[in-house]
Image (cartoon, rainbow, N blue to C red; front, side, top):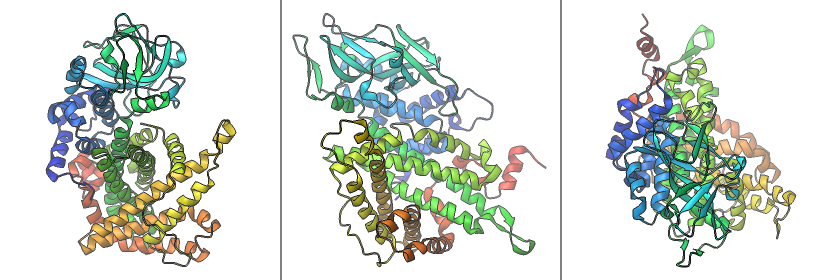
Length: 581
């Protein structure tokens, strides 16, 4: 279930790539950025031309998951290269022969890919971008220019000077003196020797912990690029008389077309976040099962015997298992899109926000439960934690995605097939909670203020909180339903029992977080709310014997976890690392 339709042979191939020397943990202080671009070249050499992997979305997502376990630093660079640079050129380049030279260099990473959209003054307002690409009607070229400081491209992966770069740059197309909206343009940003291309100024940004220190501010000074650099996917171009044409009339819709590959990268990012959360749980649960802590009468017990630890880690296990199943569904959606692209994009929006934050919260709990051991980089958890912190704002800030998704859900509020709200006296298992969560969606839709014309900030702002809550409610129900569907697919009784307990914990966790709302709405009785803690403890007690099998289901080889505290004997592992007596 956790690997969908992917074969074991495929995962073995991908694991072998991230097992290579280039991906091994580095304790020698090697330049992190140089190391990541070396890993990118190794990946292209091992897995074939970048364009081929970009056209195989399930394989690419699976590769990014294993990369996240072995080398989280590399995930943002790989996403930018494969999905946002190569993917955009392939999707919108119409097979233009003039783009072949760019693709050839991206194929083997002799030029690394970049994707430049956000600007210093327009971080979250991308449709207002100011970078200009002015059409020269006499030559058919474009002249790219940065008109003001606020239009400088900000947080671009271009600071590393030893790697050639080819990037997709979002710019406002100006033709015949008219603004036609934002389009993507492919262009050389660093030459083969690493020098910035003519007219391109690259200014490194201050150090930050994640991703590697490759971030830069980029500006353009009358950079001339050929006409075939414009990427439209056949939706726009120039007539014989030099006038501009576009089959997409609304400028905002043209921008959505420009950033269409974010649909793919959000899915991969969510799946990679789940992979790190699974790895963090595997490390922490192995450690907790053998770490001895004080017990009654002066004796000791394993840390995992404490119900406080069980509740934290098993609830995280339930949420991550649900999220992992949901990520598999998203990967299928990207690989074989439905006829309703709007619905597919909406689905990916809500799960990206849920899964990246679920991963962040889970890894934070793992770090805390491991105590001081969780602080050491060699035990991997802080590495996952910093990566997850970056993921919640990558490929669309989660808050913005929630608000956008919530507003779209108001236009099509159907919560899903077959849910009927039970009375407050019904049974309180996962199916009960799924129906209750569907009713929460329906009521949240009604709570979003509707305005025929939202023309003032106060009216617009009144929608923000309920819209975000609605998007969360949809995502949380989908996650629980993914677990319930998993139970129905199980043929092994023990596996079915384990997944049923995870579904119960997932439902109870949701109920605990939102019990006040359900009580206020009359959908939950005080007696039911009062049983949540008791039922959580019961489910945790019953889940204990299933934990080894659930961790085995993650399928993470020991050598990829590579954390001393995840070893069968963590004290022996530390002795080997430190060469102790």
